[in-house]
Image (cartoon, rainbow, N blue to C red; front, side):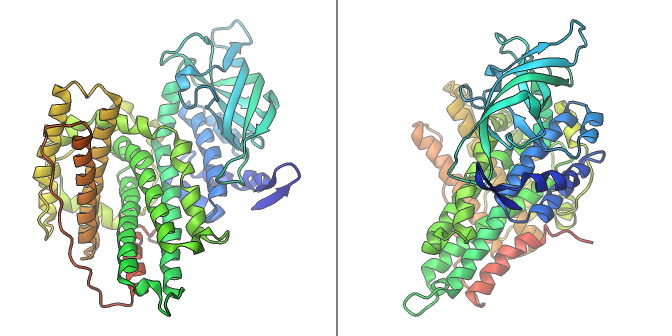
Amino acid sequence: MFVTDPDFGSIVDFDHLRGSIRHLYDALLPDFNMHKSLQVGTELYGDEPDLMIAAGASMLAWMTIIAAGEDEIAEELKDSLFTLGWTEEEIGSDLLSARTTATPLCADPDCAEYHIKGRKWLINNSYHADYHTIVAKTDPASSGPRSLSIFLVPQSSCKNWQRLETHVLSRMVLTSFDIDGPGRLLGKLGHGLQILQRMAMPSKYQCAYVGVKLLNEAIPASIDHLSKKRIFNENPINFSNVLRQMYNLALQGAVLNFIYYRALAFSAGSFLQFHGVMLKSWLLLRANELLGQNLLVVGSKGFLAESVIGRNAIDSFVLPVFDGHYTINTLMTAKHARRYLGASRRADVEQRLDRLRHGIATSRAGDQIRANSRRLRNPDFFDYARYIEDLALPIDLDAGLIVRAMQQLREELDARELLTDPEHRYKLGALLHWMEALLAACELWKATDEPHFLNAVVMQHNAFVNQFNQVISESALETPFLPQMRGAPLQIDEEPRAFLLRLYERAQQIATPRG
């Protein structure tokens, strides 16, 4: 799936990608089945991040055509390779400041043909794509929400490519290039931002999916290596400090894996935006951290080219960068703080657990890309503390204290007029993500009935407390600090390798497709 190019060296085989990617498109049109398309991508491109991300970039660009309501064009071009023409060097991902312009080629107010002129930067697939979905403006002086439109631009309108060398995913081809030629308007003029937001809703799961895949390769590989390596004539996995570190990594990796599939299980409901935003910001950053810690535990083995341990740790850092909006996503979550913390509806534990136990890995068609945006912006939250109480954990987790402390923190930030400050809104949104991660860890324990996952609950609780107390300390707030919990002693009666792999795989088993 890789070729040696005379200009670029070893790169993705874009001809092979073009010939196979139709299978991904078929899962999305006419029946929009997001999970199925990701599964098909795994079957086609295996564990190669360069291929998965190159295919993902094309799929996201093609999904933009669907989000614009141009299904006939999307169907007609299913044998094509696409790329996203959003970013420009001077503005990064601040799309409202885009400088690329679009001039209509006729006087008809319904004219769909335009001349596109500008320069795009750090674009994946761009040199080899057949079409580009380009963000441009008809009025370059405008910067409001209706200033952007989306245009489908053929490769023939692009020129002057310059490859941008990267430290990661070196077999992709990222370039800057000029656009100076015809393009076709997608959707309505001035609705570009709305189209991108519609496309971005389901796409939030794609980068997170790659991040989870990288974890699911690297952590078991580390467990295997530490079970075979010899130090002082002993396998390091038998050293108490190494075992504890890998135990912690296995539990945290299991929680992230579960959080991804848990979000997917509820993606058809009003939690699409809340969970999707969490995946594309909080989960991606946590995956980076875990993969980095995993590499440090393993040591020199991770530096070898054939090892997925080091490769995945390095490649994972491109995921939030490619997303480019993890800060904005977290700021979006902060808007939900009052409703999230003050919800009074009592959730049905058994109903949710039934979905998690039996529907978490089921791929099913939906219409997330055309979901009602007003409903998505108003998730139907439930009583957080009451739900954790109903889960009946056999540990002293005081969820009511967490909710009250968060409410007090929010009220103090509001009283000090800090909720208008992006830094503090970001911190508040991140804390809500940590709360939701704790809730997910509780559900993981309940859904699997694995006693060791109680320690995963404690770890998520203490991670939340660390972040909560740090916010108070950094801003010299008066809200009281929260106390940490104590985990259960690590006692195992299995061979360490088998024990750790069983724990890690237990969370994955619940996400295994059935039938």
